[in-house]
Length: 620
Image (tube, rainbow, N blue to C red; front, side, top):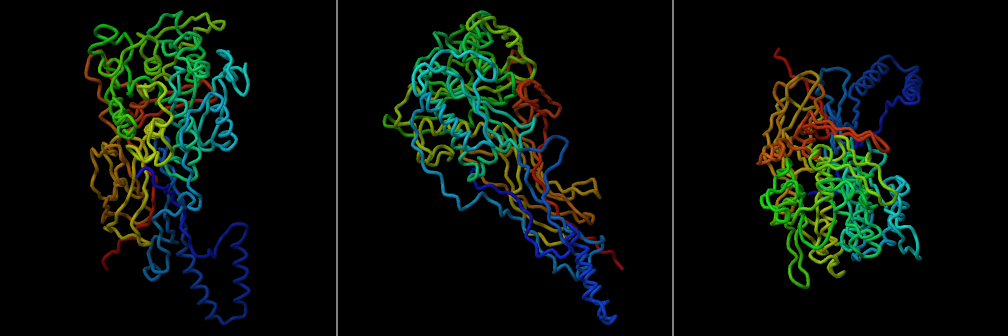
């Protein structure tokens, strides 16, 4: 299951090493041996030397190994190799029984002695509480967290004054970024969450802050949390419309921030708000593959297109709106989110699963000018909707800030309308009890299920594979030997194709035989399907020496097909889809604190397990 304890492979405990060579230890051992044998009869000397050579010939080393491939390793980077070294390729069966058997199960789960996190009853967080929480998380998890304001980092004005432990404080826009800084690279996939563009839609800000809190406090306790922080970079802006949220009003100084982006809008009527500018500045510095913007007043998850350009009829009803090129992937993603989020009972009846579909589908919602969703999706590749903004507010904003390279704005940015009420009763927000149970656990509610939504989206940004168990192997494996491998996959909706690979420097062929898995779903009605157990047989022709075993898989390949109408502009355009379906895909953004890179691949590989194959006997 996805919420199982993390399985990290660890070197096997071996009996005391008698022949360590670090710091001259080998020389000291040799000197002691000379002293102990000095003066003994020749026969005794020869016997001792023979035993010593035998011990040297069967010395075992067990080391960790990670997957290597043409592209950077997938998120699962911790594995194990079992390498049994001998002084020659000849195998002496008389000593095989003395070799320790490799341990092929993991023994390094997160600490079992840590108490479970206390159950949190979710309550709305006001602007001051959000600022306090972000500082608290930074103090507690400094190696995993950075916080800043867009005023500090980008020199933006504050939209106005907020009440923070007293009146007349600047209403700054705060950002928190979560990632394992020691493991972060330019290839780490990135996701973005916006808590609120409309200040009176209250579920989103509390959701994203409680998501950040749960994720960080689960890092040492939960396998899934550790994987997300170690292998993703998660940027959260709890209240882009900080002024509106502080005042509990929709607009920022009378301007709607979700009509203020550089898309399908008049040049003088976009980037007028600090909310839109704050998001714009952060996006210019990164490559986000997936994103959510939280709202309230409806009950849905929707994706582009959602502008008036891609409507076939009246702009408001948009009957038969054009499909986006990434329609297939976006639809599968939102259906998966809907099922994992689930429904829950309230005092007024059942809060059903989210409605899903395109923003320009009148059965879902209606199109708008200047929406964040289409801007985040199309501004790097579709010039039809792009606008160079020239607002006059806050002393203006350079038109160069709405000139985008071909990498930054190719995200699937989902509109999430959390509830028909803009501020649901606090009693319906839920708690952290069983918060990650697919479909909803005991503490389900508006905040709880949207924490689950954030969690799922962060996982989906990149596929991963992990071998979690291999049947107990003999010390030297005989050609033709049969065993089983248990493995898991995630970061995807389905496996298109998967196979076991056994490779050796002595052969170019796959040295293992197993059944190829095709078209296997990873999720069923919001639940993660069990681990996969594959039966494997080493080929009878396998040469002697070290063999590496790993899983290779393709994911979600059906997303590569163009959408179903001609106006979709052909092939998918998002990093999310192309990075897993197109090996030639490469996107680079050199702006910001460091370069961001998205590299495509079709085949993804797991951690590796390496074992030794005994030589085949020749007929005499």
